[in-house]
Image (cartoon, rainbow, N blue to C red; front, side, top):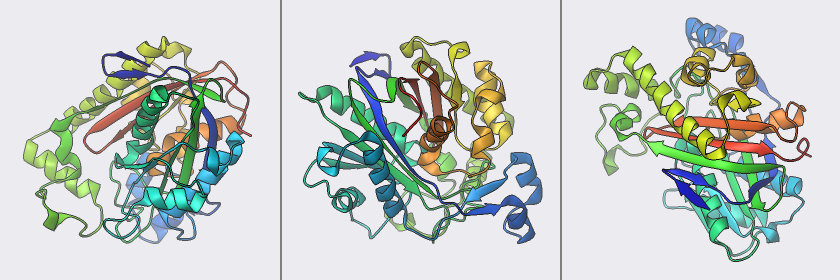
Length: 351
């Protein structure tokens, strides 16, 4: 594994299996507006069709179920897992408890390294960076399992108002199995960068302290408005900053992978509104919206750290990718953290 600036270049790291738990249930945007759950104009602007809605299963249990599917897809058993990295989106149990240990126990993996990362909606990018480094340092062939999930409606999450930025949350779990030498997709590059000047976007005017932790609903829109007002940012300047952050990590990952934007088969971004996807990622890359996965994302909503993996699975399962195709994944989350990865499809559609 080598370094090029702050880009991680994996050596022979492959995605061997993908597991997705996407509930069949949907809440349509029209029904949400009619029920007074969200603003009709904002829904129209975003282009949202519906969000995926489950039966109230906890996020960590959705991650476990997705993990089982990923292991099956890779053709391996729980005992073959050498490392688990679980990305937590929201508190998934009592304070001080380990969801990583729970996932390992529920899957029947037995004693092995299990780590939790809290990188918000970029949790799977963080898990990928960590696991790729761990696999490179492993002295023998090894397998890593990455898991995450989001329950879009919970005691601290309102699926229609909490996410802000024209996003509405759905329910999903996902998992990746990583290994060396072969798989359905090769990981060519992965990178991330945190831009601390925008840390306050997800904190607003609330001071950081133990007393302010874990109280009330997540409300990104209100916190962001407080931050923008206090910092004196112009909304247009902020949008340009977002586009610049996404483009910077995408450009670095593409350069490390030896790929130009015009060689990409698809671009997978956060399941946000069409204007955000187009202005934030597609236009800076000089690519048409038809290469994005927005059309799929608008039917399931923002799935937290699952967005990119669920969209990748959708492209594979619906035969929209072939061996040799290159895929760029880009994401953003609190911090403000931007991340990107480039994959090359090496096998046919996911089993």
